[in-house]
Every structure is written in structure tokens, then in C-alpha cells.
Length: 301
Image (cartoon, rainbow, N blue to C red; front, side, top):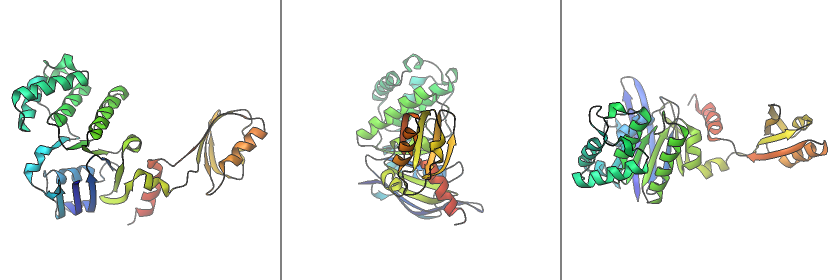
């Protein structure tokens, strides 16, 4: 069943078009990446999706029904701009937010304590929000988004300001939620984060959809012509006719091959010249590289 369906939604603020004719579908159990640089329309899209603002045109369906506010009880939302009550302690705050989503106080308290243990902030449960680090505050708001076991989880820049260890902990939690069948909309400008985890993506640029589909389908349209190599010795193999361009960093190099070129030819030449190869990895282009190429084609669209 489709969890989210946007059909040609459009939004303007004064004379600026924030989102132009956007259509996308998010299925149950999917990790969906809504990508694009800052100002591309990601947050505007989310705000329309959950009824904070209304589209100027187009339609929104949630859980296979036209948008209605009652559906918001089935959604967990972590906004880009965090908002917690600074003077409330953590447990009282989570219980209050759980009650707003229909939980009884005792059940909200039980779940809040379990989540704080899971996310390694149990020691903070009796403290006021203003006494906590930004990372801890972010974990609290993350818990608040999941406490009522929503079917659709919306994360707007969830890892902003987190160290790598805590970012990985939250990402593992989201992957576990996906295994339980929940749909996750993951909005970010960090394409390297999304590339590893998302099933489907929609890439926005200046309010327009410029690329969409599954990661596998999108990458299948681009040649695996990048080579990352670690080597010691003669570097003249980098000048092989199959190489379109390269960057030599001393003991590592990044190579871009001509379309259709066989990377084995480069490897064989390196070995023939006595170069010691410790790593020779043929790679697909990154999502960021695909984005740059795509935007170059659509910048005047």
C-alpha cells in the first residue's frame, strides 16, 4: 500500500517557487531519500506532506486516502529545526509528547525509559533539556518521533551536528524500523549518507524533481568507469590510453576511464611495469557525481 502519494504539488512563497509539479510515491517498508542542496524544496515538501502548509495546487494522499489531519497520529516527524521545552526534564517531556500522539501516560513513560536505554542516554532522563548537550537533545527529539510507533517516519536532516558514533546509532535504529515494515522518509543534503541505505530517491534542484527511482536503476544508467588504486612504484600506468583523466596523490590515485574502456588493461600495464598494486577497485559514480552531471543538464530547464 502506498504510504505517501504526491501528485503534481506546487508551492510558492510570494514570487518564489519553492516546489514545482512534484510527484512521488513512498511504499510501506521503504527507506526513501529526499535529496538536494539547501533551498531545493525538501523542507517545503515535507511541510505540505504533513499539513503545516498547503500546496497551491496538486494533491496529497497519506495511507491511500486524501490528506486528513487524523492521519498525523500515524506519523513521526523529526524537523530540521529542533524544538524542545528547555525547562522540562526529559521523561516528563517525552511522556507529554507521547500523550499528544494518543499514548497513556504510563505507557509513554515505559516506552520513553526503554528508548533512552537503547540510545544510551538513560542518565539524562531526569535532567532538564537545557542541561544537555545538543547531541543528547537531538536524541530526545528522535525518540519523541518514534515513541508512538508511527507507520511513517519523517527525518529532516536527522544527523546534523551528531558525531559519527551517534549518527551510526541513529541510522541503525532507522534500519531496524524499516525491517519492521515502517516507511521512512529521509531528507538531507548529504548524499553520501543516503547512498548506502535508501531504496528509492527523489532528487530536487531549485524546487524541481531532476532524478528519481531506485538506487540500482539510477546507477545502471551510468558506467562503472571510476577506479581507485593504491600502488607503490612506477606511476606511468596512469597515462594508459584507456584513462580519460586521473589524480595522482602519491601512493593512491583516482582514475576515470574512457567510456567502454577495460580497466584490466590499466592493471595489466601497471603489473608489467613492476608497479606493486595493493588495491584496484572499479567503482560506480557516486550519487553526488550523478547529481552534478544531472543538474548540469537541467540547470536551464
